[in-house]
Amino acid sequence: MFDQQPTLELLFEQLGLDSSQEAIDKFIESHQLTMDIPLHHAPFWTQAQHDFLISHWKKDDEWAMVVDILNEQLHTEDRLSTSTHH
Image (cartoon, helix red, strand yellow):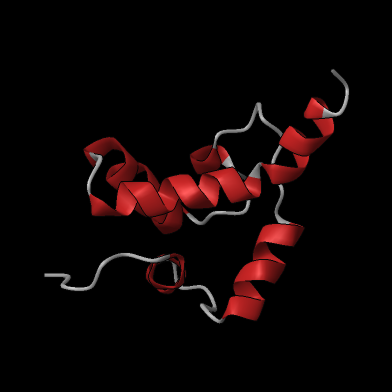
């Protein structure tokens, strides 16, 4: 099975994406989502990536926390822009 504690880098590896810090930062910056688009519904995931994300999120396993972190980071800009309008 999987022995390491899941991290954002390992999540990117599992998703078949470049897991270097620079690549992760660039991905997050260029794939921002509005709050009405759930992470697993983002149009840029392949079916396999979508299935990986949703299955671990539903299981609420050790990957769920890392998926939540990615979700927060991909919704940062929308959250920041809506909070400045209050």
